[in-house]
Length: 285
Ligand SMILES: Cc1cc2nc3c(=O)[nH]c(=O)nc-3n(C[C@H](O)[C@H](O)[C@H](O)COP(=O)(O)OP(=O)(O)OC[C@H]3O[C@@H](n4cnc5c(N)ncnc54)[C@H](O)[C@@H]3O)c2cc1C
Image (cartoon, rainbow, N blue to C red; front, top):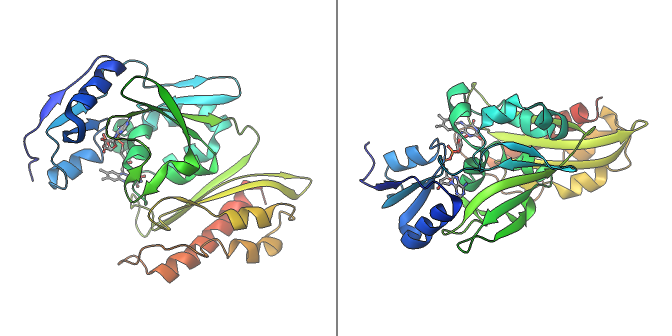
């Protein structure tokens, strides 16, 4: 289908972009890489009157080493993240998840900020940013920035802490240098959206797990942390037999969807199996 008619503006500064959003309010929509928005417009699930394109706004793309953390501009594409060795070194789970996103064309157009702001529960980057305890940097109409922890960013189905007159400008990730990581994505065919995904960042010393973060994709309306599992993993020997029972509980208390790919109970089972695999990979067993 052809989208409904809309106006298009391409501001050349963040303040201009924020002014355009303030002027048009709920009638405006930001466009970044367009990989989620354009299908939505073509299916006429949304019909904004104005698209505010962030492509010409300087300073929104790129990765900066800020000492103890990386600052990733919201307009940084998946491919730029894959190409940057600092991201692989300090935020490995994000790279592992992005290699599982769609195909090369989409990875060259789609942006980290667009994917996070879109907040599809089956999207692959929500769980890694939770597992990395990232911070979202959001600019408001008056130009001031506020910081929202990833754990408070995803509010519901396709709903985040970014307001209609705000722009997600960056994602800050404290360096996880030396942490092990894994992203397990279960699909029936390649390039499919996750039926279930699990992101893990963990550290083990002398064969004992000292820190662990486990986050789930498509196990509810938003990406989720499996905090009970994380707690139970601390102090455990990093061996398969010891971790089986703990990891099997990853899906407990979740409300995943039931669809043609599997019902909720099957997804809970998958979450346990994938968590076990991801934890064992992350701790190097
Ligand atoms: C065929 C296909 C297969 C796909 N497969 C996968 C997959 O396997 N895994 C996966 O995770 N994803 C998949 N995707 C989705 C894709 O990865 C992302 O959702 C997409 O790239 C979003 O980023 P974007 O820059 O294109 O955002 P856009 O489409 O431009 O925007 C998405 C939404 O975010 C808002 N937005 C964008 N940037 C900002 C910002 N800086 N601040 C505030 N709001 C903003 C827009 O207004 C819009 O509502 C697939 C997409 C397609 C078309």
